[in-house]
Structures are given as C-alpha cells and as structure tokens.
Image (tube, rainbow, N blue to C red; front, side):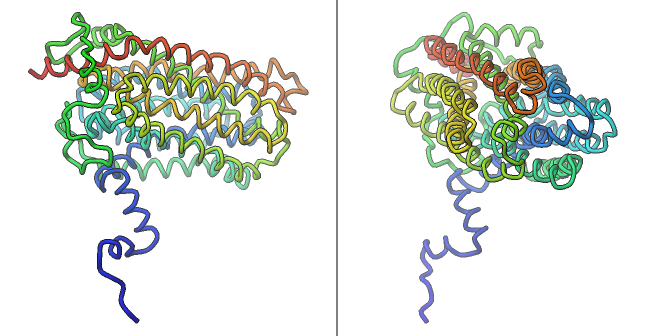
Length: 487
C-alpha cells in the first residue's frame, strides 16, 4: 500500500483528533503563543462566571438544603459582587503598577480557597461569609485581563482576540449551569463547589508556569506570531480610520507625561472626563445587571415555568451556549473588518443593535410556556447580548491611554460588580413580591421580574447611540496621549 504524501497537508493531519484540533485552534488564533494567552485569560474569566452559573444551577438544592428564599439566594451572588466592586479599586491600581500575572495567580488561588470553604458551609451564614472572600478574589480578573490583553495583542486585532477571551465567560457560565446542575442534582451542591475549587487551583498553577508578564506600552506585541487579521502598522484600525478622516484630539485631555504615578483620584477624574468612557461604563453595567440576574435564576425559572426536570436542561443549555458563543467570537472579527473599511463607529453601533435586539427577543422568549417556541428566541437573545461585549471592550481600549488601562477597567468593574451585586437580590425580591406563594411554584414571579428588567437593557441601545459622536474624538485623544507621553 502506498504511503501518504509527506507534504504540508499530510503533516497537518498527523496525530490524533486532539492534536489536530489543537493545531487548528492555534492557527486560527495566530500561533501557539497567542492561543496560550487566549486560553489562560479566557480561563480566568470562565471560572468567575462558572461560579455564578453553578450558584444558579444549584439554586433548588441550596434553597431546600439551607431553607432560604429567592431573595436570600440572590444575596449570595450580591455579597461576592459587592465586595468585588470595592476591592477592584486598589487591584486596578496594582494592575497598572505591579506584575499583573503574579497578581492574577494569587487571586486565583484565593478564589479556590473561598470555593472550598463555601463547599464546607454548615449554614447559610457560613456560606454568605465565604462569598465575601470570593468577591475580593474575583475583583482582580477584569482589570488584569484587560491590561494584559492590551499589551499582548496589537490594536488592529484586539476586538477579534477579545471575542475569543470573552468567550470564556460564556463557556464558564454554561459549564457551571451544566456540570454544576448535574452534580448538584445527582449528589450535592457541595461537590459542585469543590469541583470549581479544584479547577481554580489548577488554573493558578498554569498561569504561574505558562504566562509571562508582557512589557507595557505595546512593547510585547511582537512576542507572538501575527494573527490572521494582523495589519503591519503601529496603530490600530480605529486610530488609522480616525486619523484618515482628520479628526482632531481634544487638546485639553492630551497627556504629555506618563500617568502611571497618578493618584487614584486624579486618574478617576481623568477617566470620567472622557465622554465615551462614561457612556460605555453605564452601558456595560446595565448589560451585566441583566445577565447576572438571569444566570442566577435561569435554572429555577426554566424548571418551574416550562415544567421540565432539571436534568433535561442539559440538552437545552448547549443550544443557547453555542449561539451566544458564536455571537461573541464573530462580533469581534466582523467589527474589526468593518472598521478596516472605514466604518468609524462600528464598535459603538453593533453593541447598540445587540442590546435592543436582545431585549426584543427575550420578551416572547420568557413569556411563552412552550419550550419549542421559547428556546430559539432565548438562544437568539443570548447571542445578541453576547455580540455587544467584544466591540465594547475593544472600544474602551481605543479611548483610554495605555498606562491607564488597569485603572480604567477597575473603574468600570466597580460599577459592573455593583450592578451584578444588586441584580440577583432585586430579581429575587421582585420575583417574591410579584409571584406570591402560587407564583413562586409556577415561576410567574420570575417571569415578571425578567420582563421588567428588560427595560433598562433596551435603554442601552440609546446610550450607545449617544456615544457615536464622541468616540472618534476620544480615539484621537488617546492615540495622541500615548505618542506624547512616550516622547
């Protein structure tokens, strides 16, 4: 029998299925080095969202085992997010001044310890205290991941790469709902917590061994192979398009010195003086407000509203997850390409459309009691909501000088985690108030709470449209600030 050809195609197909998938993934992401960055940073975000996903998936078991209400369950998520909002401020400063990888390793290890302590909780009060420790560890992920991404990935490719990194949030939430729900239903919610603790410990070791600290200010952009959409230019697409259109920077906000040593108050005042940044912070917080409430109660709602067993959700969650994942990955790459064709505000318009479309799709999705009718609408709504995140994160990096990325993200994280903190408690309280005793068992209270909370989600579209006018000026200002401060 003739041997296979030894050409490039033959070499590419060598190895088992796992090796073939790994090679293709590395090629798609721009090489093994960049794939490692995406997987590790995405893994950090995945564990954070897996926690809330698991909390929602184990909601029935937690409420029955500890004898708590919807509002008390929501308070468990509120506690961790609330502490995280406070802790994110000093951690954002550290992200701009210290070794970011080491900071992420330490907080990931603390996160593992907090999950293990929570799994041992003999009472609601014990579990609530463990969530406070969890929130302090949670706060570092946002500022550190965004700052590292900015220094690992050239501007021309950030939205596309951020799409892959942010996919970690969706994968983690889906894994928490699936694995956490199955383990909680078959064994105990405690085993689900222990599994997350073990995964976080493994990630902490992987970060320490595999992720090097990049040079700041873009000096590390050449550390890995260029990605598939790479442009051989020192500036990103947004800066290039804005410069080609002759947009002038706001001279009163151009930095002429390195802001790394600024006080927190001075940095916050400067960041809040950026008009687009203010609008993006509000829009991001409102989007995560709805997402936090939905992922906390989605399992309880689905079981009671659609009248299906929790084990049957294992066949439904992947459908929603795949659509949302596709929206996250495609949004970054497509907006990058549209921006390269001169569409200056595409990173603002796409999130605006995504927020409005998500709200319109979720309304009938949570109203219908037939799974066959509701599932496609909920899946498309999740996909539309996921579309907003990669362009938003790339836009935030476009409009903020590089040496302020960590503190800019910590400022956003404060409001985002504050929104995530109050969302589960408000959702739970509204569900209890609107449902009554009969509505609690049928899911009517949760349905009505979801419908009410879709109003601020739709309002995000208007907020984003308002940012179209200021975005080009803020991009030009950030680019000029980076040039002037380096000079």
